[in-house]
Image (cartoon, rainbow, N blue to C red; front, side, top):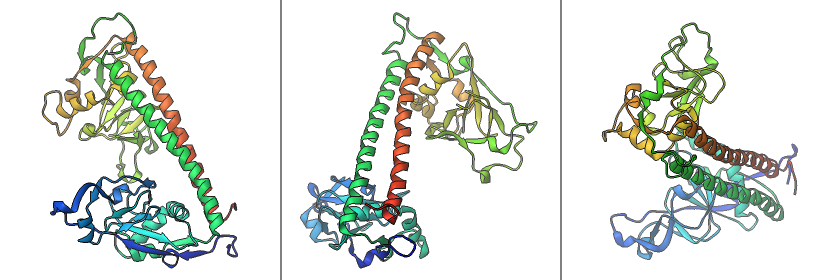
Length: 392
């Protein structure tokens, strides 16, 4: 059914579905919790997937003595509250299961398909999260969930739309599994190549241990001439590396900001222990906070890409967290970092190792880009199918 603007008419979710919440048995009573008994889903498991296993299970006694209920396989769940992105996410039970009170169970009437509702609510995730702020609270409630608008389509069309979108989900699942395999391969190659168990060049002697101070140098140059503008002010994150800094966090005067040349490193001395260190992979010099530590690599000492791979190993994380001495550091300045010792082959073998690792990294990156592209395509397809712009 389309309205005058050629969009699907909508109805309130509460008018076409039964919405119930679960409960939590008393955790002080061990008899209520039984491994291998009744699956008990929580919001941590509601993440746009079919839930076939749960971290916790409850006993029949725990079910009887709490507000928990068993919902049938195929029930749609929505997270009413939870940390980070959890609130508003949906999932579908792949087994009969109970839930806690932070989940709402949605059981549609015979005219609506649960899988179709799953995609509708996935598509409206941001709008659903905003509902929780309309009443001055950060959580969703069963009453708010009932207000979610659902586009009206015939049951046949709903199932066709679900089948199309499920195909894209299956493709994403395969790509995600491929990415995980390539991540494991890269991690394994780093461990074996950077620590000598797999040699890029045969018949080499054992690698000497060298301090970082022997192969790097601190960079303290600043933007005193104001030759670089605010658009080049960057921050360092532990997941995305060098990224543009939000304008509201940039100081009015950027003359004190430090220069970060191409292939040099920068880090926040208070956050390097959580991985906030990155190499400038751009071809131009950028700016970073005056509080950051910036350093470069000696051309005849260490390849920047070699160090970039080394910093992503558990070995590096251990030594950064302990400062190499077993004691946890609150701040790591250049002098602290420079004291660390690295197992370091000569520059020729470093380059051989870098070539292998960069090829594996590029292969992983291509899969990540494919996932981003397919996700974007699915989002556009979902929008057009659910609104009725494209008919099936």
